[in-house]
Length: 91
Image (tube, rainbow, N blue to C red; front, side):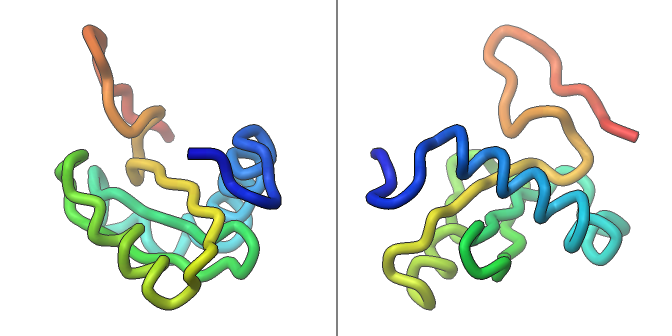
């Protein structure tokens, strides 16, 4: 579902930048493979489980920020899920 203020591309761009510049160093150790959801407007984030079907982190963000623009990634990997492919670890 599209966000009311930001395009999908802008949410992705902001999410990646916030993760790389502000969050990655804080969360990567001990959380490889877990899902991380970021509110790209506030920088607030939540770490969830390692199950793609489990969107608890995003739901917790929405409970705090009702109209949050949320970007989700898998910590330490190039994608959240691989359909017919392989998830690759990032450096």
